[in-house]
Length: 369
Image (tube, rainbow, N blue to C red):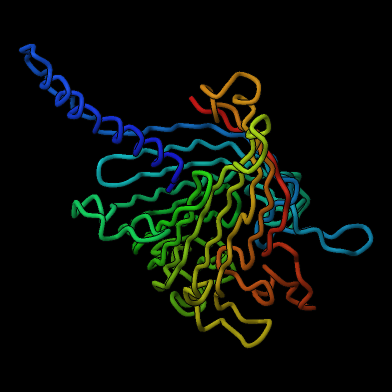
């Protein structure tokens, strides 16, 4: 989680160590005085809540694409993103929670459309853009704090923590995804210059529930549950590996009158989790395969301008941030961008639908409250 927040908490703790020193100095004076009890630290050393709005001009949603008049495939859709983020630090670790609403354009239509301009009956329909809600949390428990030691601090390594978390989403398109996953593992936290940090977390990832309406028995005939269709459209995947990383650093090498800038980013890899439809009977070779692939989800760089510090003063640092970022997501949700006929590729030709890889520059504003 955020090293910047932990730095603030460490400063609060370091100030508390001055209190005993102050009493020792008072004891040297020839005056009798009764020492005042030291106030307990609050349960949460840092609480940071923020809301954001961002605009993503070239988002994607796997399997949602249209054909332009010149015959090329358009697999992108503009998305407005509304987010709430919470971070806190307490005596033994950190908690991070975020929930976002993604509002798509018409190229990513809501139910009952199964494709842009087409409903489930194959007749023309101008459906509104889909709305997705996605939330996640991550909690860490620091080994230095739990065992009251500095044994897990050496060189740039700041701490080692046990990390747990969960993701969940829902979307009102015909697919009706309902992703539920849990993660658990270790986090290694490293210090970077200028109050920066770099965290890397090797994890176990298990997506124990999702939903795919297209595989539901009865949609394309009765089928055989567990072989050619899923009885209720719900799917479950195998546990796999994951690696999540993130970093932050102020651009402290800039002149003092320009120290309003910072960079941050993240990258995550999630291993193959089994057949994407949970129906190995239907999986074929090559481009007809429905096997999941390693997923790479990243925002390699975000450039942030601390507008409140620049225009109001250091006391209000990061109360209002303006930022621009680049987002790259390959094999989105584990879907093979070179296979998955009808989703990532056109079933008849194998041509890419350009919907299973997301590559976009986007920007937004974040307000702390």
